[in-house]
Length: 497
Image (cartoon, rainbow, N blue to C red; front, top):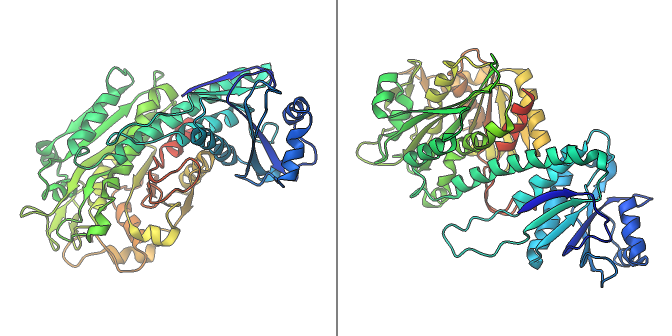
């Protein structure tokens, strides 16, 4: 979809749909609304009143213009109360309007810039949010079925002050990067495990780095992992015919810097549960278990264009967890890269075993911060539901920065405690650690297990088990399927690091 900004007269710009925003309980209409309403001889306000349109957030009013203005239709989108309007409100409103346009088969959409003039929201931020909402709303995964014609093909922001053009253009550029990284992650996660196995993740990492002088990739195969002592990755991979890999991507900004961040993603391309086999119904979406790595790859797909002023390491251990005569067994003991021994009580708690090695590998890169993303526990979904990520951290400052980035990105997170008294629940009688705790507090004991492998490095763990894959339509830009959750949070964080 072609997205641009134009300084055009609202009433003279030809398009299939012109979108205006409206606030709940706003006594005076905006200048844009008044201009269009006057050109329509007052009918816009009259019909809205007759239909009892109140401008509640997400509500819409649609009418034809019958040639009174150049646009064929007018859509008014409710933004809710002005005092409560956020960038997420702007994203949702834009996604709503694009969804209606797509449903009607319209090709060209023009919109005013929503939420201008609200304290704390710049024109660039609002433009970025509108681009994100529009691009994400238009996404569909049609690789395995007959492709549908996609509409619309043009989305223009119009009637903007000349002084804001440059800001808005910058916002559009960043919004397109945010959306592109998210959509790549969606594609990777939506791809069935038959076509998205460990070797394929390696191929995607190399393809992303190809031709980009700021990014390099190093891949460690089975033999290298044996030399490194990566017992967690190797143990999980034992039951699969697909060999494991540890992938290390590095972005270096053009200007030398000592600032360094490590992003670690869980990369289990399919999780059957291993010998602790999942019930059949629980396996149907287990292609999602590499969503953490997909988010890291989404970030790296656009990182050279976003150009954060810090060195960024992207790390994941790509494996498949399958049952076979070679698979690890409950009761086996694995030795992780940092030499800690782990008793495997449940082979379906495999993600933390691979993360034990990848987190320790991240520590060796000496970053100032580590952020990991993992579809780690069903317990986190029980606690927070399908839409909220559980955040755990050993550093309050870093936790606050990531939470702030998530709020800016419109991705929901909630901090959970690393309760020290629960550490004893992951202690083993025959090894240093065991890979599961008690029945209770499973998300927390998983976080405490991971903490054993980050040493003193400031670290944030994001349990994205719920938000990584939507089992139903969540909102106007998050439909059933992979969401790409985490990409925009990470990019927003890197922009400010």
